[in-house]
Image (cartoon, rainbow, N blue to C red; front, side, top):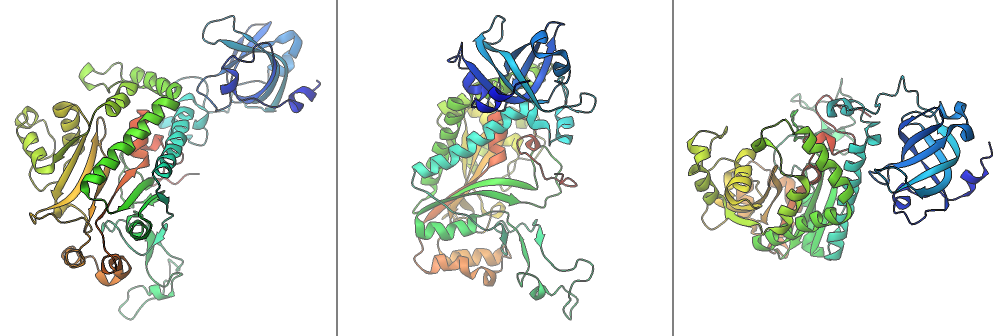
Length: 486
């Protein structure tokens, strides 16, 4: 077969071809087969190249192209196709490609390829995560993930923020939680020991105990108190033994830090930021969102109406079109305790002042009581981190959590404590060794200012935007307990 045309003409992406502006022209497309069906005389190939949720229908005349060639075209085979773009004769697509040449770049054995064109469970696809990108669901999810990453950088760049790369290997624990992955080059079977039997980390690569970061916040504060407004966007790690639909051992965080910001400024930024991201998704990802919405509705069709999720696009518009309610933690506790839900013992977890709210409480406030997104502020200091600004009441700190429908907390942040004496006292109370944090305390010694920031878990955002129910389905290669494949 003459392959000159397919190699010499420029490949066009299916997303561009489906606009229908090239009808009557010869085009070249390259991609992977989603399905093939047909008769003795003609085959219909659904081709996808990852640029769009939609497939291009390719019409292949058996007599012209040869039965031997077409029998080797199966699901997931990689093809290069030349042909004439014509108006479609059937329903479901506006254009189709009449193939004149087909090159098989890579065959795919239908007896061995695990993801055949039928319904597969998400658990099965997680077990084949290296191939799940080729499904419609996961191609949509990861196009949206890309779009949201781009929108985040675009937003902060437009606001004059500086993108700061904070370290992945660190000697500090920003959260004081201790659930960190140790980084070492010492011999695990025979590490050097001190006289008291403890490990001698002075002989380790960095000369001290080091870990994978849980947050770039503390280093971000250093940047903000010189550059004004910075943001980080990178991987973070938690060694939590949590096998849930909401936890990962490796995930991505967006953490802006702003000098001269107080709690009110922080809330304003968080609301504007989230609305900007959702607007970008609605403006640029509608095909993928509509596909994922239909997938979710199909998945939940047998559930009672009151247990079904809000329609995906409607949910995104709900956040975009409503001002966020701003509410002190103490008032939230009163609302919850006065609710019929509480009085009828429908909450699984207790509702007492001083306890951290659970997802069920947060969702009740958003979905049942206010029917709007909520920003909770002024939490009890004993359930929050050492660096949060202490309020005048001596009991609460200037913390904030942004709560969304269907998910609960999506952002956590605070105004930071800028007073050196108060910060050191709080560190002592919480067992955070100040002598190891002299570099951090210097920001309070030399030109301290009011400042604030927050953290947005990228995968938590993606759960909300895509409507997926498991956080392992919005990151390419999930890292969870006993699972570090690929």
